[in-house]
Each structure stands twice: as structure tokens, then as C-alpha cells.
Image (cartoon, rainbow, N blue to C red; front, side, top):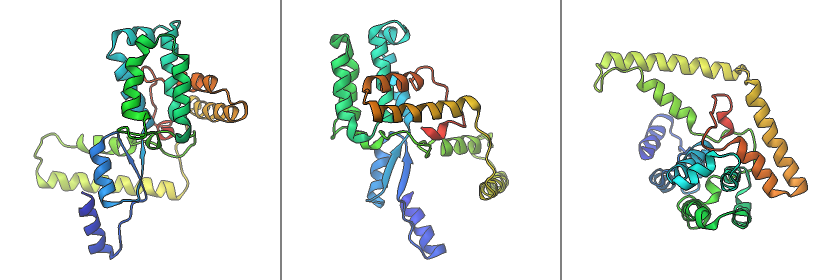
Length: 244
């Protein structure tokens, strides 16, 4: 796909298609393909999908799942702390992870989750090391939900796996018109107001991080942030998804 896009740009615009930053899911094949064509590209992954992956790991173990669902359970409270890690700078993840290990109320049960994190997300040679998913809070986009939403809407326009050509052309024209409308809104600085609860959540997270930088209370910061973005029950709205 990337090679094809490069050829199109060269053919129609006589310019080089150079991607500097790319938002991708946690798919190693997609990362490798992008790096092959754009060696210097910065890959940014989605916090929301990361949280969902971590929750699936917890949910797959009955001891972890039961502890996580019990708000008064020490092991469950400890597991929720990990969901604050993506809101730290990547160079702080290793120390933060070790600090969390030291807080574990039951290493016998907790190691199931921590071993998974080390091999997949924490170690420098892991499948998805911290520089891909950890970053201090900001309002800059950090999600793949935009293109996913577009693809879902686009695919929903067809009612058979092999639609007639005229139907495809009609859908493409309608999609183009909608896209141009959105572009015009952006050019005119017209934005949909953010829901109050979403705005408060983002402001609270930014404030919690600022407090952490001053007081250096890591566990308190992870507790506040982890409880706000825990994987099991956080329902991501369209307005707040850019924060991920």
C-alpha cells in the first residue's frame, strides 16, 4: 500500500510522499511495513486499544478478573494502577514499573500480568516497547479511531460483498462531499463543542500530571489516572477519543 501511494504522489504531484508521524494499532506487521518504506517515521499507538489489550489479559485469568472487579480488593486496586502508565514519559516507564512491582500485594498472582507486560510492552526489546505507547498527557491526537470510524461508515454503505460499479461511484462521491464539508469546517475553525464531562476528564488528567511533576508522588498519580482510564469500564466518547 505504501509503495502504491508513493507511486501515485510521484505520478500526479511529482513530489515525494514522506510520512513523518503515523498512528497505528498494535500490529507488528503494520509497524514493520511502515518502517520499511519510511525508516524515520515516528509510530504512535492508541492508548485506548492498549488499555483494552491489558484488560483482556486480566479478564482471561479468573483470579485477576475477580480481584479487578472488586473495588475493595488490594490486588484489584494494584492492577488498576497500571492503566496510568501510558500517561508517563516513555523514559520513566521502567522505573515506574519496578515501583509498581514493589507495591504488589500478591506476587504469586500478580506475576501473571507483569510477566505479560514485560515481554510485550515494558522491556526495551519487547514487541511494543514504551516509546510506542507512553507519553505525558496532552491534547494532541493519539488514536486510530478516526480512520476506523471512517472505514466502518464507508463499509456500512454497501449491502453486498460485490456491489455494482455505479453504487461504488455514488458512495465515493458522497464520501468526497462529506469530507470536503469537514475540511471547510476545519478551515473556518468550526468545531463541535466537547461534552463537559470529557473536558473535565482531560483537564483533570493534565492537572494530575502537573501535580506529579511537582510532588513526585508516582503511586498517587497512577492511582488517579489509572482509575480514570481503566480498561474494563471506560467508555470512550467521540470527543475525548483524541486524547488517547
